Length: 258
Image 1 (tube, rainbow, N blue to C red):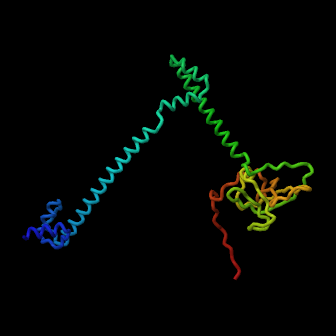
Image 2: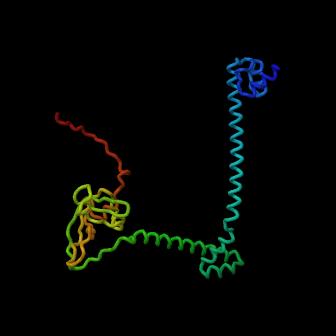
């Protein structure tokens, strides 16, 4: 009867209800050392901590096995859907010029194979260089919403100046301070990239006066840029970013009037 009640208390997890000899027996079976020197509260704590650690270890092992099975399943799926290396090689051969393909059929000697591989590398290098030039031209080319303004001899240019405000897809010269106004001047992103303009620059330039009978735009566009922060536009490109400037700490003391 006593053994049955002991087993019931043990299964219910109420270790504090067990007697000291019973706790020592459980601790010995779990591999806890120094059981004879531990008191009952210490034995309960040691057994509880060890059981919790065993549960966490078992849980981690199950999760690791589950992750390994999922990774193996993903690898199998990717191997089934990914194109083979031979298909990639065939595609590269189709993209290469016919001269290289004809030379590759005649690579019986080591000298010919070296020449062919060198030609392939040079062709790939030239192709990447051409793609880089295309990307550079696309970057410098005006976007779809920007139009290059063509000036004629009869056009009248008016001087303007203000603070540059760069937004997401366009920029403006704020001619009446920091806030938007009706006399602001539109600045294209092409000009921003060309001259390395930054938000807050003091820019002076010229706008074209509307021709007779021409519909007046809401904002005049900047057609000529004269100065950026009092400097020539070309020299302003070499400006250092503010975050990269070296701070100079004060060396002289300023005496303020009281």
